[in-house]
Structures are given as structure tokens and as C-alpha cells.
Image 1 (cartoon, rainbow, N blue to C red):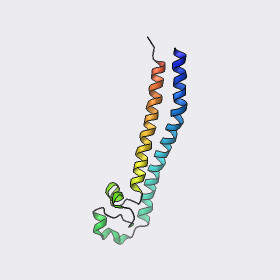
Image 2: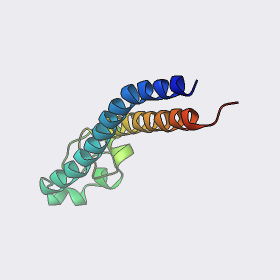
Image 3: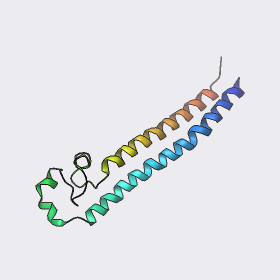
Image 4: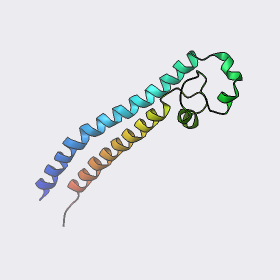
Length: 115
């Protein structure tokens, strides 16, 4: 019975491991992309936009790009695409965490003494 548990654990790891690593990389890269996009937005900003009330209240970002949703969720300096990057990060981070949890749980189960 111990061999069957180990075999199942190896099978789950072979599937969930690469998917988890892939999802973790996508999550990390989308977060990095968001951070770098923020620097790009500031670099392309028109400094007179600091005087624009639409920027103060988050209806428009400092570079004049981005939708209402980007401004609401990302703040007044949010670059365009903020919402999709955050959603991508959350989805793939959740997927990576789920794969990690599955692999950890299956190996814990496989190593536990059975009755």
C-alpha cells in the first residue's frame, strides 16, 4: 500500500509541479510588469497633469491613459492595463498556491503511517 501512495504522490507532483511553477512565474512576471509600467507612466507623464482634478480623484492617471477601472483599482497614477495585470497576478498566484498545497498534502498523506 505504501508503494501505491508513493506512486500517486509522484503522479500528482509530475502534474501539479510544472503547472505550479509555470503559474508562479506568470504571477511574478505580471507583478513585475505592473511595477515597471508604473515607472514608464511616470516617465511619460505630463507634469501639468498634477494640477488636473481628474488625476487627484482617480478618474484619469498621470499619463492620461488607463480606464476608469484602472484608476479606481490602481490609483491616480495607474498605467493602462492595471486591472488585467492585477487579475492575472491574483489568478495565477492562486493557481500556484493551489498546486503547492496539493503537492504538499499528497506527500504528507503518502508519508503518513497507514492503519
